[in-house]
Image (cartoon, rainbow, N blue to C red; front, side):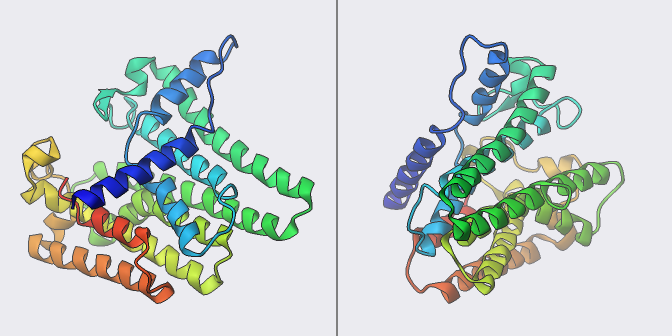
Length: 305
């Protein structure tokens, strides 16, 4: 177990090093404050799951030049970070702390936090388009086709038909009493799983995977994202407060509709296990090797905190 944790930490450090190549400091300029706010949240730590998944997906399909995937890793983490900044705003979740320190709008102010989120979203697409222009300049049409397809996936999974759509459904769901299983799965698929799908499929696309393999990675991303959320619901019922760092039972106390409240604990555990096993089985169909991506997904969906 300690070796697995050490390996994960080494991978996190590697990804942190890659992300540090992007979003550099800008001093002495009129927009210095918003860049500082963007960097405040972008470099706030975290597990870096999405860019790590993208890199490991690229490696699993034997991608030869990792400089190709790096801009997309940074872009995806920028999009994830902007979504967290906006989620924390008073108009949304109205949270004061994230990852043990003040949220962006508390550290700066609400207007700056909104602009920092907007800045990260736009910089994500600037980062990817800059990489694509290099392919244009080099006349590398084959790479440009892969980049364009990856760009399309990134925009789709982060937009109204992905993450934003899931967030809207979540907000609308809070206005009424209870939610159906179909509605809850829609929220999980789009609010959480969409960016995981983006990570896994973009890594595969850029490495030159086949359409069938890319489709399997997208389905794997769905399974992982939904299993992750179900595990969240399970831990809120039977988790260890000392590991979670927060009291259990808050979902029931707040009368929040969860997978556990709809299906019961035993069924939720069974469904989470099935989704997890299906995700690993799909990866096994692609490669029988014990790649790090498989271990990463197992630890993610079976976590205890």
